[in-house]
Each structure stands twice: as structure tokens, then as C-alpha cells.
Image (tube, rainbow, N blue to C red; front, top):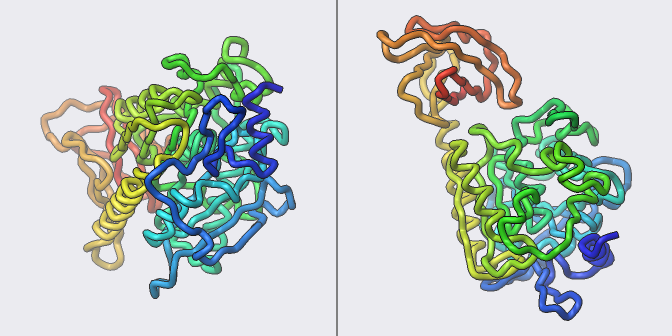
Length: 411
């Protein structure tokens, strides 16, 4: 077992790595997620503990839920926050940055969910991302009982938790098996009772996450490789396809969730440039509303940025609410209007039942139309006369053309 894995085991035994501000080994490495500039008393909030979100009584499938103070509202949006442990602890939900991310989210009116997840010793990847997707499905399946506003569920994470949170954002439209080269993995999984529910998340906060360890050579990180343990003890040189499926950058496209990236220049565990490369890749793929917050701190949650996190989440939540309201305006006889509210593309237009090129003199172009899972529903030639889309169900759709154009709309 490598040293990074030992840190995770230490975290699972009740230590503070990934959430409590502790020191390890006398070397000056601060593995605490609490950071600076913010602390609060999580004990002031109502809590439901040790909820089994899968139903198998595995410690790695337990979660705690904290509720904001009574504000007269029957439902509240959600922030799921995942602890850091180098993927090596299956029971650190009690030290999941509660005094920083936790109190900031609760104080802003969000339900806080802190799940455990299985380690690579319990099950190899993609078990860990399967677990977090099961958490979201459980919340949707029990929304009425828990008072969850399912219109906005965000996921946050520190260190290895930031990796899992980032994966949640870039795989929210991956429903079936995903293949890279010779490797195929089921990213969604089928855990728990609520497999008919969606694991879709609306926003992501990544705190010092090793989002794609193939990029860690951009800096000077500590010489540990727990990512190899995630995929069966195989390094990137021997198993590049497995590592590609572990890396968040593999899945990025324009349908992904907005991401808030916060990473310190003094991080000697995960190099800051790994987070910056992730952010740059998101922007290059036209993922909307992403934010990058570099700071001078080390490996942890920078508490002084939790206010910015709340502003980011509120912005995305309010934008989505406005889009949904706009999408339901008008429409005689209960008809659902189609609106381009997620992106602007001046060359493609859409009406209730027709997708077409806005410019009548434009040359026809080949196109495909897919749903948020990536499943292609229509292909063909698109011109100013358009194609009939009346058969589409309500939902979010992406149109791509052979000249590189893309267009998102909600029906």
C-alpha cells in the first residue's frame, strides 16, 4: 500500500485529513479541509444521521443530512459535499469540511448532504462515482420526506472529493456504458432503490481536487499515486484507458454543469495547475458560467472563498429558475414552448415543432440531435425549411452540426 493510501486509512479511522485541519507526519503538510476565514457550529442545525442511501448497510453507503434553519419554506435546494481521503476512507462524512462549506451552505438556505463512499479497497472505480450518483437519486426519490427542492442539486468536494464532484458535473449526461479504447465502464451504476430517478446535478464546486491525475505532472506534487489503486494498481503508462475513464477531462462537453474551481498555489499535494487546466478545458468546450478562484493557500478548502461559493451557487440556481419560468410562458392550450435559454446560436432557430436554419439563404448542413444522456435521437440534413421535432418529449436537447456549431434548447 502506498503512503497516500495510508493517509486515506488514517482519515477513515477518525482522523482529520480532508476535513479537520490536522497535521500529518510532522512534515508540515496540512491536509485539513477547513482552510481559513470561515468557521461555524454545525451543531446548531438539525441533522439526520447514518441514512443508508443504497440499502445494503455498508458503512460506505451511509450519509448525514443537515437542514437549514426554519425559514417558512417547505423545500430547500441541496449542496452535497464529499470529503477528501485520497479515495481511501469509507467513513469520513463527519469531517467533511463542516465548519466551512457546511455552515456556509446551511447559512445560505441549502440542505447539506455529506455522504460516505466506498474506497478502492472496498471496490475499484467506478464504484466511487456510482455511489455519489446513488446519493442524488436517493434525494430525488425521497424529496417530499426530506424537503428537497429537486430543481437545484449541487455537488461539492475537497481533494479526492473534488475529483468525484467534478466527475458528477461532467458525466451528468452519461447514462450508458462509456468506452475509451479497450476499457468500458458503467459510470451511472444501478445502486439502490431509486434507479428510475435522475442523478443530474446543476452545479459543481471543486476544492483542490485531483480532477485528472494524468495532468499532475504540470506541477511538483508529492510523489504519491493513489489513483493507481483506484484502477487496480495499474499506472497510466500500462493502463491509459482506465486512467482516461478516471479523469474528469475525458468527459467534458458543452452540456456539463458549471464548475467553481478553487485551488491554492501552495498546494504540495495536488498542483494548482491541475485545477487550472480543468477550468481551461471547460471554457474551451463552452461550458457556461464556470469560475476559477486561485488563492495562495495550501491543500484544503479556503474558507474565505465560501462566500464566493454561495454567490456562485445562487447565481446558477437563479439563472435556472429564470430559464424554467421563461420556458413555461405563453403556449395556448397547455402547449410547451421551445426556448433557446441555455446557449445562443444565431444560425439555428427553433419553434414549437420545428428546428431550422435561421438564414433562408444558408446552405444545408448535416446535423445530429441528442438528449442529455448523449443518446442521438435524430440525424439528417438541416436547412431553412427545418425538421419536425414535435415527437420529442419535454427535456434538454443538444444539436451539433458538421461545421462545428452547437445549440442547446429546452422543450
